[in-house]
Length: 319
Ligand SMILES: *[C@@H]1O[C@H](CO)[C@@H](O)[C@H](O)[C@H]1NC(C)=O
Ligand SMILES: *[C@@H]1O[C@H](CO)[C@@H](O)[C@H](O)[C@H]1NC(C)=O
Ligand SMILES: *[C@@H]1O[C@H](CO)[C@@H](O)[C@H](O)[C@H]1NC(C)=O
Ligand SMILES: *[C@@H]1O[C@H](CO)[C@@H](O)[C@H](O)[C@H]1NC(C)=O
Ligand SMILES: *[C@@H]1O[C@H](CO)[C@@H](O)[C@H](O)[C@H]1NC(C)=O
Ligand SMILES: *[C@@H]1O[C@H](CO)[C@@H](O)[C@H](O)[C@H]1NC(C)=O
Ligand SMILES: *[C@@H]1O[C@H](CO)[C@@H](O)[C@H](O)[C@H]1NC(C)=O
Ligand SMILES: *[C@@H]1O[C@H](CO)[C@@H](O)[C@H](O)[C@H]1NC(C)=O
Ligand SMILES: *[C@@H]1O[C@H](CO)[C@@H](O)[C@H](O)[C@H]1NC(C)=O
Picture 1: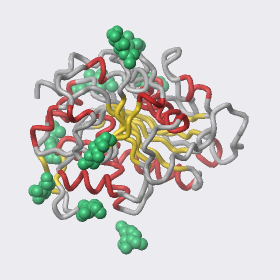
Picture 2: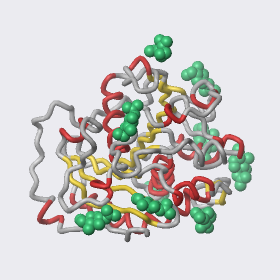
Picture 3: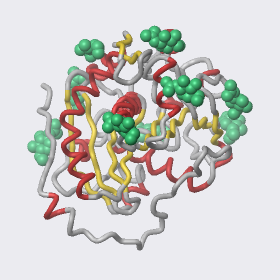
Picture 4: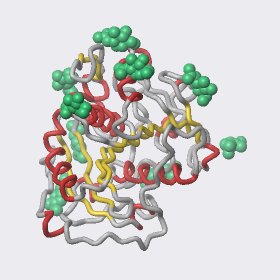
């Protein structure tokens, strides 16, 4: 049976506004990556990617996507050390939003001064149905020639009506915090669709995705690549998505992770690949290594208690 959708919304005036920002942390606040896209990934950039890798992994944890009011973001021991060390608070949890069985959470990170929306990747049949719903839909509201993946689009359209009130409220309470969307795999795709729509409405959204499939045609990839309304960090390792076959295009830049699976990459292991559909990075790889897909900066499964297995790769490779 599908659990009911739960979105937490509680008095911000009581729990959030009174909170004092603390600077007593080891992790720098708001590591701003270089403007104009660095050719080399620096330690601060990799640390920022690590923070978001942890937020993406944390969306697999039921304690985050079915959180109690005021809870911190947590994972299985050792799975999200940076964010567990940070001053975080979950302000919205959601699960089972259809179509797509969309699941995730919204959190405040006072240490990094961010509002973060994190979507879980594919674990269940409802998620895989969305992945497989790849017929492209015209989205003239994004650009005249834009076509988007129908499944990701309908999942975002449905989930956004639950997400946006919480997000808007958080933005009002923390106007100086940046807003970032993040997610692994399907979660990255939903983040990208959402950011594309909000950027179009003049809202600045930073995007940090891990192994996200392409979400639309070349024109959509151009819109994402050309944006001036937020940073684009799309990490990819040695994992191919089959969508390449169907007129899908990949936005730029790509943060191509060249280190071995299960190894934490160093800055030298992450190459910046610029150019839409540049085959120097992931796009030039063959095969479908699900182990690589479940490990980018770190383990993308933050919790084993709710569906630790990401399956055999079916749903991507066998489409
Ligand atoms: C979510 O948490 C509540 C308690 O806060 C619990 O009653 C409910 O069963 C949980 N739902 C799921 C799907 O675990
Ligand atoms: C939806 O996700 C929940 C866990 O979040 C799972 O228990 C349920 O089986 C899923 N349903 C479908 C149809 O994917
Ligand atoms: C989608 O992108 C392609 C470029 O790959 C372009 O030729 C096409 O016109 C775009 N839009 C539509 C509606 O086909
Ligand atoms: C598939 O995508 C279409 C177009 O966005 C949508 O109307 C439909 O509801 C989607 N179906 C599922 C199961 O996601
Ligand atoms: C976004 O800002 C631009 C430039 O200020 C303006 O032309 C446009 O109408 C705005 N769009 C929306 C949706 O507010
Ligand atoms: C993106 O920018 C390129 C280069 O400036 C331009 O040629 C292209 O038309 C832009 N595409 C869109 C969809 O904005
Ligand atoms: C990756 O793993 C293989 C096999 O264990 C090993 O031979 C190789 O040196 C490793 N490469 C790097 C860059 O660590
Ligand atoms: C593709 O990426 C490589 C490596 O970063 C770069 O040398 C090359 O210029 C890029 N090609 C395009 C068309 O941007
Ligand atoms: C990643 O975490 C999951 C869940 O705890 C675990 O089953 C898996 O072995 C881990 N993968 C690696 C490579 O450590």
